[in-house]
Length: 206
Picture: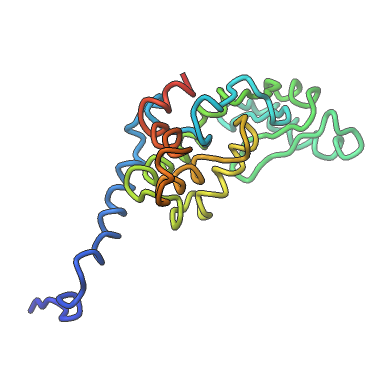
């Protein structure tokens, strides 16, 4: 078998390989090696994070491994009953988990009625994954532009999360990061966004 080096690669500028480094680094950032206190929050400044806010509706989700046979049957049965009585409405998800939209239905399948605070949400898997990607955006890319999370622009998640859990002027971690890239902008809101990836992130979630 013969080996060859594509001529086209020899003509590429060195900065063209930067994307390879980003891909390798992103796997490190997404591997979950950073504790929550080292991860940035979606706010422009960490002191804007409101840990006690409860902007989400109460919900009930019982994992399939926690459902008894009776509870699985009840979850399916409550779907039909709940169409007329939303308080007992439950449904079996495709992955086998049972989701209930009413407190009564939740109790029937052995679940717990849950209304998370921003602090609790920030430590859930979805948020931790997004915060790892945000850390990559801050420390590797230097921008949220072109960075994706869960198949969508990272900015979408940051904007939504900041609107729920950040008290401020509508700025968020991504806009603060862009401010640091603008001429003369580093001394403004950039100081809040920049510190978020280091010790600042800990103050918000600790």
